[in-house]
Length: 260
Image (cartoon, rainbow, N blue to C red; front, side, top):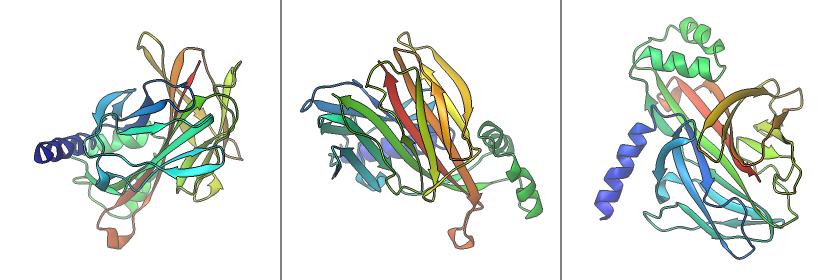
């Protein structure tokens, strides 16, 4: 069984090369204190994708922040949903960080689509100036993911030291929320003038995609509609270190929550 699970995970990892976002999705976004928070780790596009099981070697950090305390989350090989932890009263912030994974694009068109979708067109000129080939473009990518689950009033998100991350500046479960205020960070500093993709799914499963942009302080106001789940996504791209053996490195920040 362990061999089968491992094989399935390797297949999923390969599919992740062509699928974009990775996010944590709660079965219930509001629970009672002591009730289980059950978060699915999903990889795909437009809030549709593979449900990834718990694998120790695919986790650099997995923690829950609530009531001012940080608690590591443990799981079991093959668990689905991957994250299962009792809720603490107030806002529960669950964060996941992946180790680096290597990706080789099988066509220039796919790399081109990635750059255009994520507002990274500046990389075309850099790639050409370095004299790099358009075939077999290589990349390291890491995931820096948060999910917000409510268990009553109180609590707040905060920077966690991930190299890039969203910080929620409002509690989506406090009531009467018409817009979500977030701040985007990179290397501990606000990331100004950055694109945020906003994926919204309604109760019928229909997904809409819109764009937002951070201001000079890395902040953005995201309008929300009651009864929708939201995924915010922002990507940092930089030239990889020569010793890494790849050309590019991408760092993906994601935040999920629901508007009651």
